[in-house]
Length: 434
Image 1 (spheres, rainbow, N blue to C red):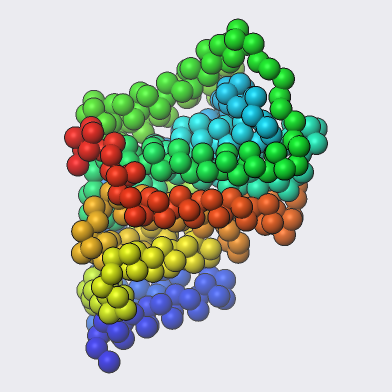
Image 2 (cartoon, rainbow, N blue to C red):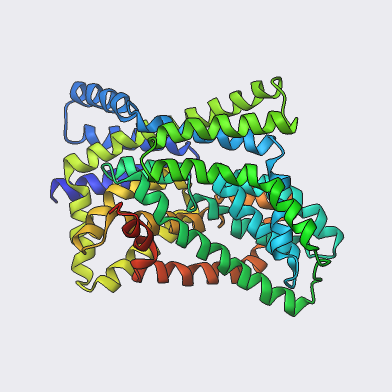
């Protein structure tokens, strides 16, 4: 047995055993990397190198964008911005059958794009919409399914912290290109949910909201403009080179903070809890990044990505089949691993395979994140699934059945994105980013 095969078996067996017995995933990653390294290197070398890699792994100016975007999302989640976006979304989708479901989807697309967090969108928009939908006679399990399926759209529609992490792990893929590339797939994800919601509403005769007059619609639009401007300012500034992604993240903190203070929906006293929550989330993410750096190093040192690449290529030389295998693997991974560690672990494994097939790293990044967005709404560890069910006060078992059509629609969109690169690459090419 060669070194790569031995290392692969030790690494993944150690990792899976720790997951099964309930050790937190970040610790499991670090311990698995250390165990694998000890099989081929002296103990003193392993401990010194691992400590060094953990420090250098998070010593990055670009990574400053992650806690700033987390803080921005927490401010918006507590700052009353969600309600104004919901009113705007209701005005847009008000005349469609099952209009409240469409408002929920549009609200998640808008708020998710602002906050960059699927969980924050599920809480803010779902928490606002669930009582309204219940009073209108909507099945709570269906309402939960709509919220769960559409909440991850914000992970693709920029700004997205996950795309920033992918950029770093992938070796500096352009963050601007990734951000712009996420728009069309993210919008398609939301539209797929709306198609399912439309069919479901027609089948169950869900009501259409009262007609909104032009003046009422215009008023909700004006109220939503200050919030929507954040997307234009941050993404426009990054794409056109006015500032970096990290500087854009700082603006993404300042702007909603000022807006929330103007709305008087947040006080300086609230900031203590917001900052504490941000610190805890940032600590978790940074420890994950540090631990994943050690795993990436030992995988590169032992040649694990090349061994896996050769194994997959030995199954078939057909790019269609290889991409299908990668998609199925990522969908399965997404069911038991959260989005951030999955990006950190599987990018160095699958990106070399994708580039060998001639796939652009930006295109692969969108495919990877789209797969994992589906994963965070599936059991057994889907974070958005648990949050969405908790908000709607329904059991996971009841929410799964109405979720199945949404899964089917999203997988269809996934395959379009996989096999039609222009869906992801059209906008970055148009802006001259790739």
